[in-house]
Image (cartoon, rainbow, N blue to C red; front, side, top):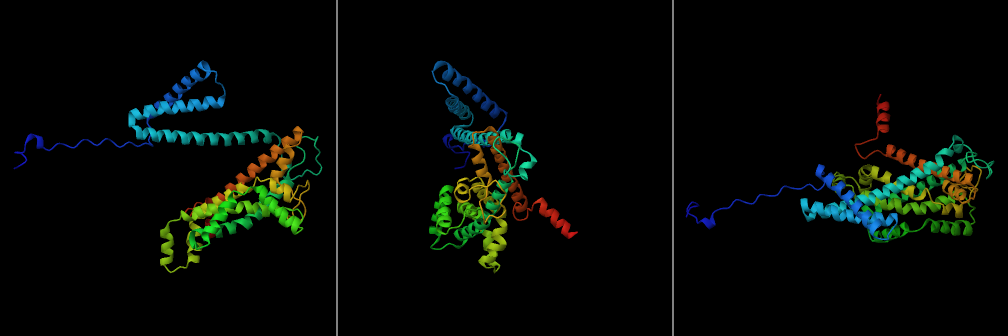
Length: 376
């Protein structure tokens, strides 16, 4: 029997058309209109119910109610256009964007507040004068924070010298070497991540200062900071090493290289940008710690360039000490120190990114200029 002789009920039917693929990440004009319309309509509905028809009040409750109503209205509009899968995707996307926006807004407000309070009283004298001849009743522009700046730079620098090599070696052991001690080392590293800085300061105070009779100094603070910095650096570096493609390791070993040469010539250069980021995270973890300075170093209004002898001030303790004073000028000096501390961390971040580059084959502009000058 041929196709022409087949019964009518057995005739070949044409396949159903495949619906067009929907790109959930793409936004067109109608998507923008739906989002804006849902935001405005939910705002009007929330205001009517929350402020007019019920005895409720408060900005936080109003915002939460408005956001819930917005998600309901917006998901209904998206469901009608693209289906339930796209509606769920857009709801999750809106929640994540809202959380990220709130965190970013809080960070921006914090920075703006510190700049607003500290910038009017920031003078160049803050960077080359100390507080030895400054009284509490003098204006906020008198004196400076050189002693605190020197102490912070030296203490964080010593902590980096101690914790960065140990953290990188720990990460190499966990990600590349392995063995029966891997679980124990990882457990200890994760446990150290949750140790408050005040416990590290108490440990150093009890062991070095009380037991070994080491005087309070900046080095004791650096030891406490390195205890808090080490787990952050090691965990971050381990994640960076695990992101390196395994093909690079296999190619290096296939060419006859040892594991040490592979780690030194392939793994570390490939993960360079990530390692710089891990170090920056470690610096950000300890640069604002105050408890170790209170216990292990104290403060001094004089500049102490020797971190191994005598009390040494730091910017976090400088801010903490002045903010607690009941005088407005001292508060202004404290906010000036907070502004300088924020700027110092920003400068360290920029320098680290410029020096570290962006990975193998993507050197920074500073290194390119240096190599060009050497070649000429």
